Amino acid sequence: MKIFSRAALLLGTLIGAPALAQTAAAPSLEGSAVAAVVNGQIITTGDVEGRAKLLALSIGLQPTPDVIGRLQKQVTEQLIDQTLQSQEIQSDGVTVSDDDLAGAVAHIEQGNNMAPGALRAHMQAAGVPYETLLLQLRTELGWQAVLHKTLGPGLQPTPGDLTAEKAALKANLGSTQYHLAEIFVPVTNPADEQTALQFTQNIIAQLRTGVPFPIIAAQFSQSPTALQGGDLGALHLNQLDRPVADTVAQMPVGAISNAIRVPGGYEIVQLIAKQQVNAGPQTVLSIRQAFAPYATPVTGGALSPDQIATVNALVTKARAAKSCADLAAVNDSYGDVRPSDPGPVNLATVTPPAFQAILASLQVGQISRPLVAPDGVSVVMLCGTSQQAVTLPADNDIADIIINQRVEMESQELLDQLRNRALITRN
Picture 1 (spheres, helix red, strand yellow):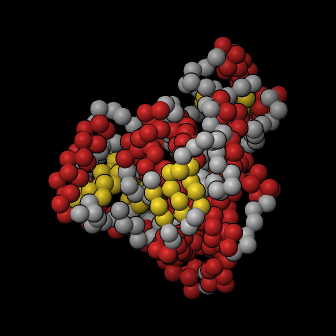
Picture 2 (picture 1 turned 180 degrees about the horizontal axis):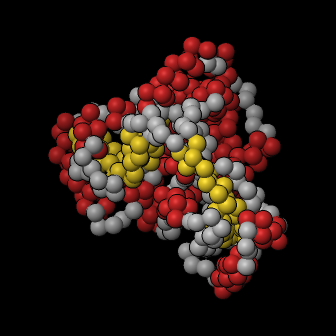
Picture 3 (picture 1 turned 90 degrees about the vertical axis):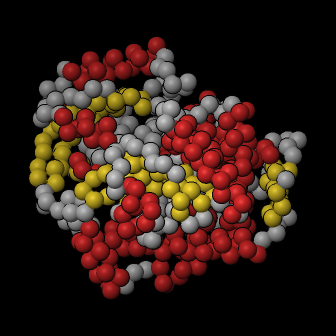
């Protein structure tokens, strides 16, 4: 799918993190075969297996041999790109400090509502080497540094750039955004048209039996978004190919499209949500939260007796809280693992939608139901609400949007150049 302008997070949650590239000097599994060779650097089948296990874990799949087998093609291609990036990082003399790496891990834990150190335990419990993630993150951070170095002074937006971006943001007030996910099936040869269409229709049939879209996207989509479960984020119709935009405009939330012919292949889209970019006052919440961590993270999708006891204990304490100050004290009693006051919360931007609905239903002084996460459980109390006029982001935030757009474009261009001049062998 063609996206004309969309800022991308270069380091996000575990699902959003890019693929691992291991060096030839450090194969992940002894005795592994060669999966690919990139400019003389080997990617082993062990490298592919380790990264596929990480991907399976991140999208909620059990890393069975069958699942790993279906992910291998996608993961191998991502590893090839990641290896090219790693080689460019070394060529540019860029290094990533241990502090930067630790910060990236902390960012992922926060994004997945995990306590410090819970990510390592979660991966180890699932049989995925923690080093796989560390190598992946080190490469991604190094690649960002290469891009910033390549762009140089041109990376920073001018006053004119800021003015133009503000005008674009202001024009979007009152418009509708569509949160989409995609699966892309390429047609590289006209003779394969019918085969690709039949394959696309088979995928749609699986989706309509209730198989989660992110799982199918990760296994079968040939788009760069595949390893993020196909998630495209929130877009306007004018950012989409015309056939896709025409389809999306008529879809109800939650629907899965039929096969859509686009340049290069067939597209399947799911409309996750749609919302109007508010032009009027927005509801801003003041909340407090109490978080109780588990002694060990949840594995296998079911709470243990000890974890159930933690949930019950927090609920008992929270029900005794008569004010937001009382709930903050409850949070303190659990070590203040997460701050009790997250700051002002714009209700319109809360995700996922289920959590937004919970907050919207609360009355002042009311406690939410328990919110269970892999590393602990939390409850929220509404302290107050206010209506605030819509304002454009601060200049620093708008500058970040522009910088992310430029970095994303440079990433694609540089990676295309590296692919074109690389010697790549796939086995």
